[in-house]
Length: 117
Image (cartoon, rainbow, N blue to C red; front, side, top):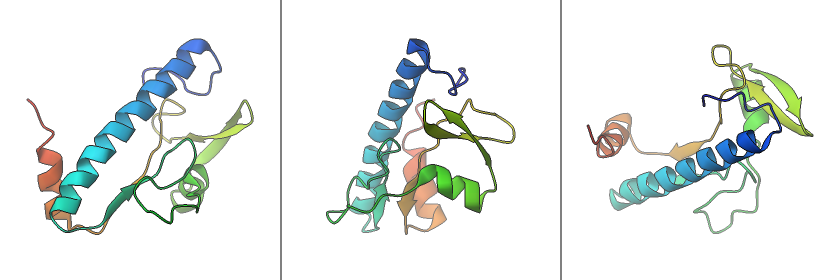
């Protein structure tokens, strides 16, 4: 993002909403492609941590905690929410996670279908 997402302004709120919508639309499309290739795919709503495709999706994926533990990223607090501090981009990021068991070459093929340039 071009904005520091640690802020609590209306502009930051709108940017987070835009990024969430972009991720959700992109992930739904990517998952549809991968599932049509007979691979498993799912993604988590970064706001709630809930899986979007799994029918038994009542387990929350702790996005920030995972980045903190697995990638060793620092965190900061913004209005009661923990926010990731990326080593290069600071708090100008909106982390979101997509899962699949597709091999990398299949994933890259699916991703290439989004290239419009």
